Image 1 (cartoon, rainbow, N blue to C red):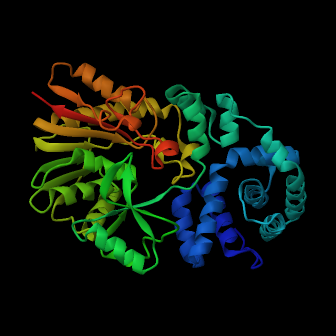
Image 2: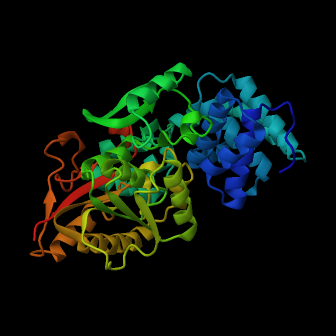
Image 3: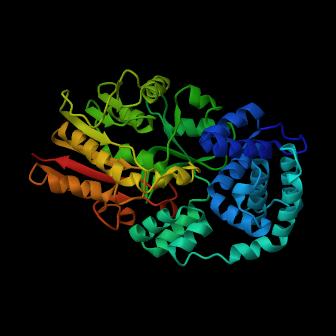
Length: 456
């Protein structure tokens, strides 16, 4: 991409570069943003604006392109990439951002298009000036009364809107679709192998970072903190010291529900990137042991480095291997099964995932999830407990995997514990003994959790 004129704000320059990398190189938006922000040396306020621009333009791509095509009277695919990206960023600010003056959104987008060369900036200027007058009406003409309309209004693939319509009902589906275009919360877990939550919160407060204790549906998460406002974790001293790890409240709840006691032996299947792995290590403490299995060698090595930074490497043994294969080193006191999934509960923090996910892959994932669950259950001792957890909102990967396991293992000595009894507001509609967290209702990632015990 040619250098963008200095007349464009640093945040907009970074956002435009991120969009181009996502579209042309297949880059992940969150990773591309992190790298570009460092290169541009963005200040915290500019970083927050760049995040809102880049994530918002990727998330709302379908809706933005619909408006562009109505105003430009041509398919988006026929536009020069620099023009397309400038239009998406400009329309995002005009139609979805409060606090950005229309003239600034238009002028800055025109400058972005100029940097791409050619005369495309003239089209950007014309389209965005029309959008100031006509854009709100075009947007108000969309509605979410049916799945297809909701998919266009809230910018997701049609199949995803249908999936949530069927799984959650129309009202929750609409609320969820509207919610996943917003920013994700900034949640942290204090690593109690290194520090105490109250002490870390006090140190952050001294640096002007406001946090509050984490809870979920009234249940305290003692190791969790939620940050009010933007926070650069990697640039904070608590990151290098191993005192803090980025972890959603949903993910923090997972290890807390499994609750292995100090000294226990735990198996963690599909362990990378390691937030839950190191949380388990903190719970079993120095006398316990966690075997963490990760198939991909690069992710396994990154997990080892995370464990070292969080001072959990004396507790955690990272094994590069296939989590679906039977194990010869059991039985374990507790097992965490966190298999690969569609990730549909994390669309706020992973803005391009909605465009990468494939409806047909869900069935393939469900079969793999079942195999990993079966392998984890086989490694569990009698009276031991297993937690099956995914970061998706998809019954085929969640309730139906657990139901299939219990059906095929009927009489084999496994029972489904009732997580919903103490947490009725988090219950799954399909299987009330399991939990389905919903971002629009619970303010955190959309996790599914099922708790099993081996009884014989």
